[in-house]
Length: 596
Image (cartoon, rainbow, N blue to C red; front, side, top):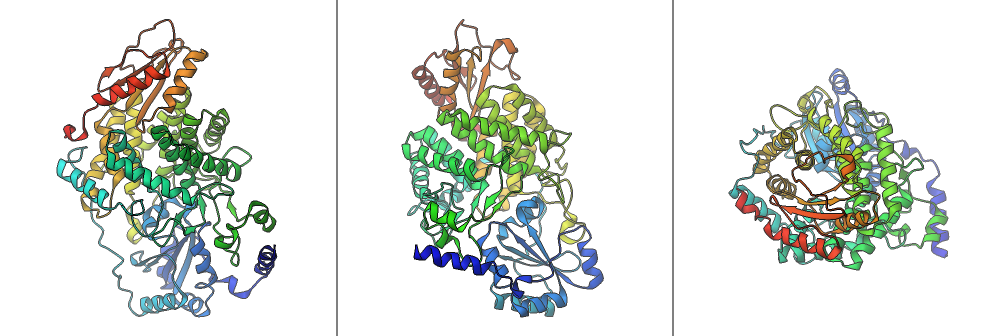
């Protein structure tokens, strides 16, 4: 209790005002920012931060409170502070540099320097002075290059082999995970490993399970929920931010891992993430908040706070929760919850996911079928919101058989088409962040292209129309060209290439939706281990499915069918029969290499 009293004193002290907390005269990002900078002959310095970010808070307390830094900023700079969660266009453009990300621009909007992470006061002083003395672009500012889309929507054999080699070499065989310094689960890397494990790859199985086992250390044992990452090349030194993107991802992937390997610790991990997500980040209207801070305040950091038990934490108060409500983040949460529902069959979880989706459709939907980001967006609409919600709506359709969700997903696909650039790829936002310098050309984020290719391909599987297939191919041709110049691993490109080339595992329940036997078969199908799955429920009273590529017989009782490579199984009437049929269909799926 002495420790708790000491922390409580620090909490009280931290609430006291101080002159240093005033900091620089921050401006918001605006369309006329560089016109103002040119008129005043000032550099623009962008502090791209996050509400939840520990090092952002440290930088505010130390660097931007430093009198010499404030003096230099006041003399020659326009300081701009932006919340990256609220501004997806800027965070997409500079996501590789944060958080915090510090970007310095000339008055004409050209980049001078891009710095990743925390900058000490002395280093910031030196940086600001150096730019005043010589505003030439530094080594962090690379040459922009044009991407000319590839002729084919598929990777060539040599290119694919190179991407696989880079992906394999990025794996940390000693501790698990992809990459070596910061330890966390990279979403696309684990998805690719699970896909290869499903195909019988023993190395992929070992890597996926080693990573999943290690990452359990990032789950808060008291409240549940996953911390953002661990530093120092270990899994045991977490940064304590709890961000919804990580909650949704880990919830989905531990649920899918449980479906694949039936290891109880994976279901327990998923349950721990779900109880935090729905217990702390769920708002009263059914929508999800963005994040919870790493620290209680400037003086009580996460290392001290999260070492405490539940009652001791609550006695001090809760770290700040960012209560903004964004369409993209809710889409991620819905997909994670649906994956957990698939393996837990907990109706309360599905109810929460559906309530969130209904809120987004009511409060964030646009007339064209897309979604705005927040209540009041500076830019946008942003591609990421509509892709995330489109995928969430597809997931809800698979989980329920309710065609209203599929119709809404189709409308999201229509909206995504409006982001298409005839010159290649899809724009991240329909409005540019500005008109000067680097902002004269709208951004096209690689991860956005990956998500568009994968979502439009899946939409095509459910509808069978050429238009969605063409949009997926348009994104993939851009990715094929862009990945040739990217030194970093791009497992998402490999996933998109696989999914465009191969049919998903296709499961169809034939039977009335109010028939308990059909409901039981649907529950079994939901829980089967297939990461890339097309699951439908054909109730003949509702008419044919939107893509009636298989003519299913009416057997007079509910039945389940598994299809692959244009071959369908005998009808299954039990869990054992359906599992055997899915395993048999998996053997008929051709190897990816044979598709090139």
